[in-house]
Length: 199
Image 1 (cartoon, rainbow, N blue to C red):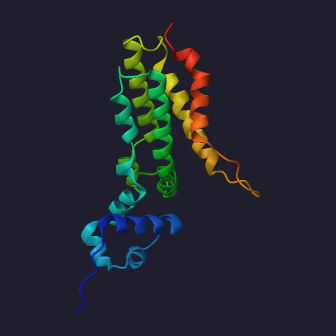
Image 2: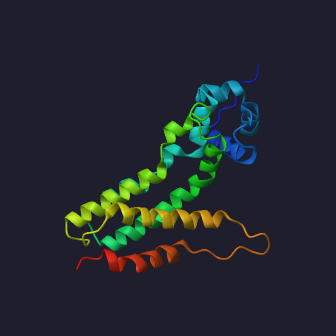
């Protein structure tokens, strides 16, 4: 009897992510196992359910590091610099998650048909809430002028999310225009900073 193939979990997750992105959530576990070069039994010894594998493959557990990094900067360094770094980190992490979120929502919005929705929560609301908390803490320290932190955070996360979405819209013909996330983030804060900086 042949010995079962040993596969690193990250290689199995990569094979699953590729399969989910190419074939959608209906891809069979047999196909995922085939791509990974393992048996379905080996797959299920690592992940109890297809849902668990799907959650890992789309990266839910890897999203949100920028939130922790931003909150650690309260009262530290230059506020505008902190916000620009936050914007860049947000774009990197959210870009990786965007395709996966489209897969999650392709299963529908009813929790009984899509159990990942409960686990997912509302990432945009969580992102906006974290940013609002950071802004509020900096206002309290006098490092930003008094402002509506919820509205400001929603403006920032909305602009960043829209930039990502726009990048997903492919032109029908011709090459896609060059997109520079650094230029976008700097430009966004060039626009917003006069209303944020302390008097």
